[in-house]
Image (cartoon, rainbow, N blue to C red; front, side, top):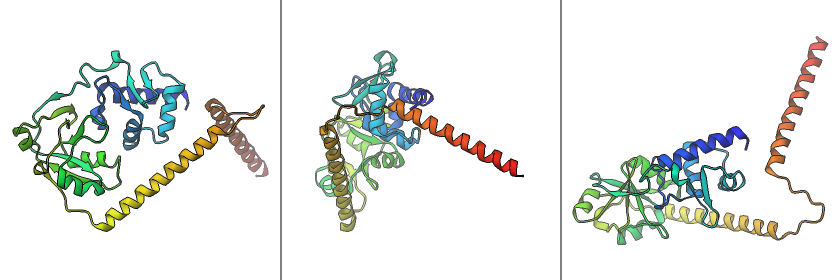
Length: 261
């Protein structure tokens, strides 16, 4: 990653982490911490930095140590420096919701939601709800290629005493469980779709297990004396030199063709 790319990425991340995270369908803790994996998904959707992977993004914070950000490596979270964050950005205040809100779910969770309702995902504080079906679909595609969109009777739920909070950019939050009477579910997915979803989940798990195994083997393998471990700077310099050699070869070929004429 060269200096120009780092400067561009820093500018994008400052807008995302310190000014308007809800525009990217992101929310943070009360201190502004957001998971790096969630930031990566938001960047991919906007096609702002298509070459980035979660690992490269984490290395950007760890290796280059941009002064605008703080990283918590154990939790894989990052935030902008407190003095850069817009005041009360992560203090989500109660607000009356519109008549309807939308929330995405995985197809395999359909019957559980139909029976027991829906609430914040495991390990998370808030359930995210969108004011439009389109934005809910974008949010759902972060965890499933074909999410199901549930219509929430938010105004009726609020009048019954259910609190909602506003995060900005038509993104609403709730901590409480939404019972089935406040939900309008789409038609139930077919068994074929559910089976396909399970097969995809199995493939994803196998790919993760294989990647973790390779990483463990790589870490356990000792480096012999005299081993050379290339750095990012080495690869960048190698790519530049390779490009220069290609340009020199092109100029020589062009000169030969002109000489023959």
